[in-house]
Length: 186
Image 1 (cartoon, helix red, strand yellow):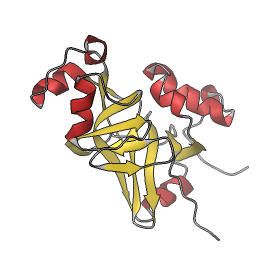
Image 2 (tube, rainbow, N blue to C red):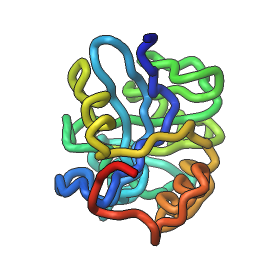
Image 3 (cartoon, rainbow, N blue to C red):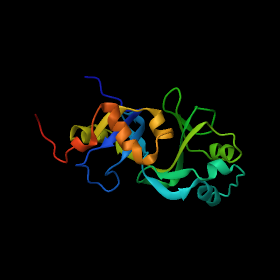
Image 4 (cartoon, rainbow, N blue to C red):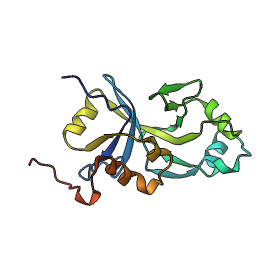
């Protein structure tokens, strides 16, 4: 059987997932291959805005409209490192191509362009990421820790943060009130 590639999927934390890092989270998988997986939690805003982040990395901006953008906790790994999920792809120094429309950039040049109003149309900024070793994510899904569904980028870029988890569940046709903390078989 061909392995499933979860790149470009949402991982919806099941109620039974009690790990404090992931309980109640919606994670976007940016890369999944035989080496493992990495993604960004897209529904955990930090108490930080882009203005604060710019101040920490010595950038200034006259673009008032972007300074209030929230910064998210992307996951528990490398929380001192920034990640920008964006559309369109663009041409940045250090970008992982997620698909034809989405890129994940870790280089400062994208933030410099954002500070002068020349960045990508859609951005999601996070500190840290979620990571899985080879086979770990597949095992967690097998043990019913996550539901997965092909992602819709509008949920990341356009849906209010407090509605993202439910919006992802709706992609599956699932009502969150019917999720159970117990797993079993029919």
